[in-house]
Length: 141
Image (cartoon, rainbow, N blue to C red; front, side, top):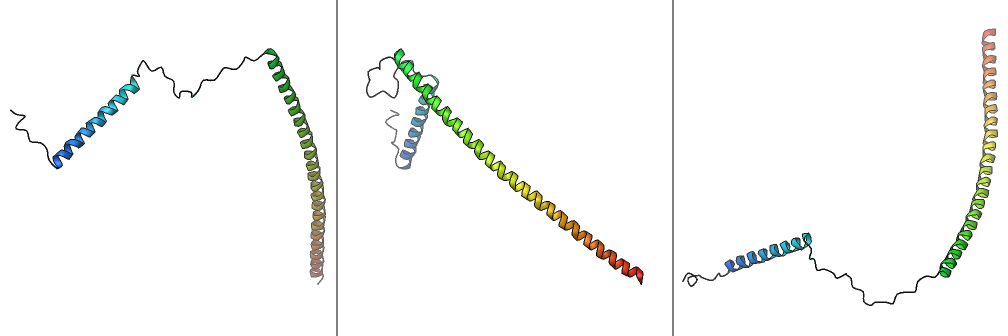
């Protein structure tokens, strides 16, 4: 009897009920995701991503292959060491050339500095002589 007296929702009431139902469904979905994150299912044996095809396995590496690989690696290392030694010699020669140029510039600057010192000292001596001559003239009067 009570159900017969129930009036169906209309207009905005229907929209409110539908919104509430959608919200409840979203909450249930999130709760299920959290539960599966905390308690993962025990029967998950699949590995993802699955390979598209299964290839035949390669033959095992033989001892001869291992020795050949070792010999080629040693040859490459020897070649790289030779290149490194050549680079070190080239860098040392370049460094010596640069140090020679720096020393040459240092010697030139030192000689120039000595010349400037002599010129300045001579200038001071000339000024002192001139002052002395002026003082001498002043005292002679």
